[in-house]
Image (cartoon, rainbow, N blue to C red):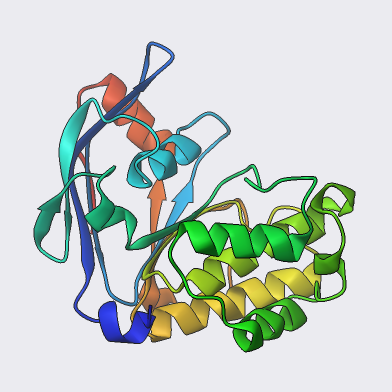
Length: 229
């Protein structure tokens, strides 16, 4: 999928999102508006709901309330039409320790119906400094190498909406630099991203908005509406 060809007319709109996990209200009446070329940075203390919000947006966690629109069309978060738009990177790699990094990438892209492009794969691995590591069993790789392979999967799937949960975790300075470059290129091509991170990314301020989920959780407790545009 060519991000620049599909994302320019895309936008994500969430209205009245409510999320309950483990009997605890994490989010209530949360509104989001994110347009092409924009990134929403999620902040907040541990347990504030950053991962849960990303999982809701990825269709992995049930919504108690709310609706979602993509490109002006009302879609179901778990539905194929919306799932084809997103690439999700969570805390866990979601890859088999028994397979090599390359085998994991091929399997993941096959599941996403993304054609295998050996030139693009090798270029991504080279840029992320995991070209050699990708030939080894995933279970033998360092946490930083695992994280870079997870990022390679996001880059290669060509989806317009990136949902990234602490993608800079376990990355060294070189890895963080490349992550910032990858996000900048994605946004410049009209892509969208929602990113949870405790660090600052070197991105133009005009493209980044911030949602402090510590405040959103407090608002949920007081039955307040939280809007991010």
